[in-house]
Length: 418
Image (tube, rainbow, N blue to C red; front, side, top):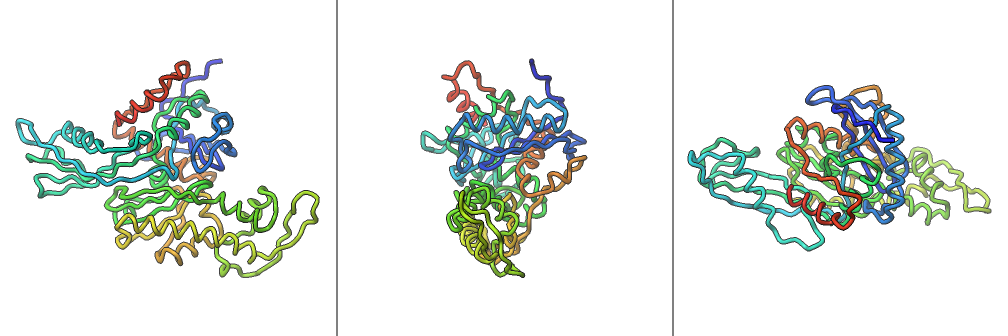
């Protein structure tokens, strides 16, 4: 039976994570606001550190979450915005210059398009593609600097300084095919740190300078903002899954039990424990349950969380504006919910740290998504809303599932058109 067409005012965000799949369904209220009308979620399988390693399992996980969301909101889902992240994401600084040859010597939109295209002409490895181009500033005649495209300004030379965001083409292609094999089209593919920032950061924070750490299951995404734009981003291959793995190994228990006690009794900082009570843990099959101190569990968690924040600190310094982040650091994602994570981050990063939860949303299910674990899903919806209001149309072309040999060329063509 053919699925009904998705309503025009419905926006869907699909967050395909290493440990969970999250689907956020929203209805547009106006140009800046949405109502959350549906949430779908389920365990993720077939991914490792944000990359598809088993397409069959990944498709099944995505399909389950999509069907869950459809049942929850009572609306068919036929298109989604998808987030992409992982430790394969890189940020490259570049610049480009073009001459202004218009008869009136004023800068037109065509000049902006031309200089962005020229900025993309950089040498990349054959397996790498450009995910996004983020202008940092425009300079007219080596003199006047603008944060926004200087359309209508007089000049004879235009320069742009931009950040080129790159990723491994095959990784993005594999995820795209898995999503489309579930019977939905892709409206946009969005860099997850940018999406999450729409949900948990406000314009003032982005303007004065802020670092955001999105601690997921398989990866931790670092994004640094200043003057309202993304200045730097990187992916770290350490996140919540490794914390759970450490508990499994350290206490000799099953993975499900390790995840359970991490959420119920875990602390990322031993000093935050007020009562060092005993915890009863379910041992391996056939063994008698035993007890451990909260402090023992906390030491295991703290060691790995410290690694995550130490590597995040390095990436923040790599942005070269670490001393200009006047809004401090915001941590979000499921890994940020471990008790004491904020305090440990403040100690290591030597900065004020706040917990980021989705903001600027309404609707009957607002309480269900007011958690850091939904930051990316909600952010994908808000990013799509912003682009629709700007009149941007996605260049993404649906991959013809009956013509598998054209998968690579179609996806590559889409990225070349960005």
